[in-house]
Length: 129
Figure 1 (cartoon, rainbow, N blue to C red):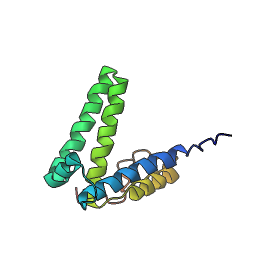
Figure 2 (tube, helix red, strand yellow; figure 1 turned 120 degrees about the horizontal axis):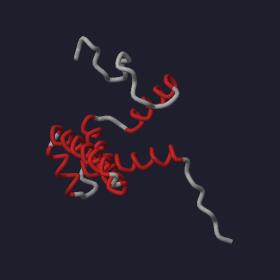
Figure 3 (cartoon, rainbow, N blue to C red; figure 1 turned 90 degrees about the horizontal axis):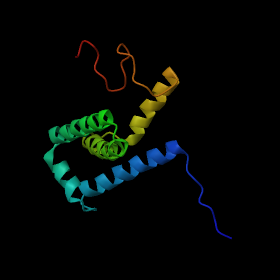
Figure 4 (tube, rainbow, N blue to C red; figure 1 turned 180 degrees about the vertical axis):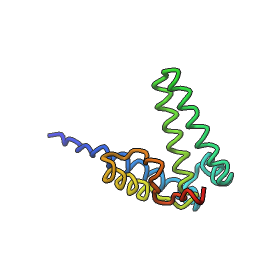
């Protein structure tokens, strides 16, 4: 009799995929894993990492306006990759991101953008802006 594979819940699957990516990026950072693209991006530094996040986000916007569903999916993967590289440079883990999402869900009923007057974890106060 064939065994059926138990499907993971969506939240767990998304978190697991991000953690897998974090682990792979850490492996490139410490030399355990080879990835020329990731090694180049890590060596390029924080400004270039931030630029790549912005570029990928803009590509998603362009493809969405064009109605190119598959292109939005592909560019979204690129955005997530570049975002996780940026997080790794800043010492941010997916667990911290998910904790903030949980906090917002408890506060607002869903993990949506906070109102402007709400100061979140790691945010600057209006006096610091």
